[in-house]
Length: 349
Image 1 (cartoon, rainbow, N blue to C red):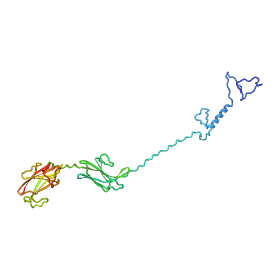
Image 2: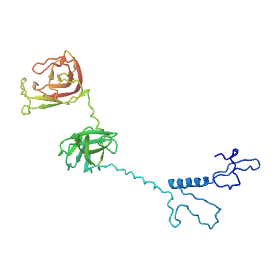
Image 3: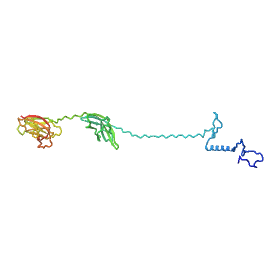
């Protein structure tokens, strides 16, 4: 229906008529024309809003006037006597599950047994003694020497394994190689051998021992021998004295000398003279006798005569190339004299 166009000719009604709500001609107002919305449009809009409210669960609140401070708000669509049903539902925050940390199971270390250790100086050694191990799985006793006050097994700094034994009944030992003039510390450990190494079963207390200064070596005189002579009567029955075989005197002279201790020593020689001090001349020495045994420290001259005076002197020789005849070698063949003794004088009655 055209609300703005003019009615066609011949369409006017014969007389005046009453306008209704369905059809109304427009009237010009100050030369401005407008359309009048159909009267049913507000109802259509209101219906759409109601359907939307029902469909989406929305609550429409219309505030027609500014409420006073004592006014009570009314929620459209809910019973005022009931608690609001459109309040937002609070979703509780989930409580996190606590993470439980399980501590590792720690196997406690086995309690070590104890050994009682004592130590003392014995001569030039350190003598140790300890109590017997009383447990199971015995493998070794380990004896540790240290320059530190805390010897350990396995070895620590300054520690030395000086002995070990698999005999559980061996409970003493002497250290022959302990350094002199030092304070040393000792401990004994009972251990067992496992695939992963040694395990200590028992440990002793620590003992400290101060070793003495080394004993100085005795002074050895390598340049002389000390000689003695004893006249034996015909009735003497001393061992090794032979009867006189000339002169018929029956006397003998036993000579003895100190032991020669220096290097390269090979044999002793004894020289005799009847005209004063024997003078050794290599290659021309009468009345010289050789003693082949380096441990022999005496020799007896049985060929002395009555009424005669004898002078004796002993020598230490070295000469590897000399040959022996009946165990006696002439001293004149010696090439090196190591030591010469004093001279002794004997008068035969």
